[in-house]
Image (cartoon, rainbow over all chains, first blue to last red; front, side, top):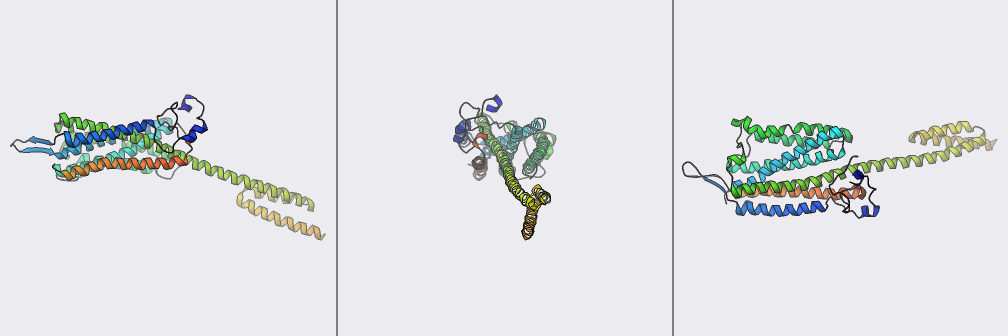
Length: 325
Length: 58
């Protein structure tokens, strides 16, 4: 923020005091609110809200019964998973326009959290489907299959990000994938309307389940708690992505600095030897030839070593020849 | 409670999954923080600086 506002850099003493983690005051408050929200959600989901039980046409009880409690986890995780993918697409689009690292890191964080939430949604949906539909999975259900495809696309996005490539190329490729993948979200959402006869899903959870009162409140609470978890994870994951890039840059800079120091040491040694060779060669009256060999040796590391050895041997031979004379 | 095992399994995944992921993210952040100078961790600042996690451009 200082750099954005044009303020001077933070004093080194304060920088040194910075703790080694990705937390901050705001994330701690967010974390506390999240914990309180999880406790409240558990109370409402298991204690206060009733099971889904209605009377059927023949007077028999129908409904999901206690399996409806899975909905308080399943539906919010699906929605927040879509939000994660949406953030990834937004970040990718802005990155391609502005080439801003900030948006790229945000896209990365959004995709990873989206995959986590979408994975939870798929797993909890499977567990819910077994007692209610009588099956864990149905390959003919378009919503199930398109949701799986959506998760796989963003897993591919994460795989592209982990490829060994130049950072700019890697970021551009993954950004394109991040934008392409988001096209699946409206397909997933509308699939129950477009292919009515090819899905086990209800059109709208809120309408079909006829939820009301405490059940509706608990579901809304589930959305809120899911949102808090999403925000907390997004902030931390963004900071980790930023640290990751910084660490990569630091390693690269350290490697460049190491090569530079090696090169300067080598150049200094070569220069001393060249100077010594030139002095020796001057004594024998063939200085120009000796210095020329040494200078060639200083050009590259391997050639330099060979050149120095050659020059040294030639110098010694000439010295011995001169003493013999 | 009907379907108790299914409900327990789904809630375990729904709560433990993000919690485990959060722990992984936190530990990774701690590990990476050691290799990055404090001056480059812009969110870890005093009150006069933004706390929004902005990293800025490269």
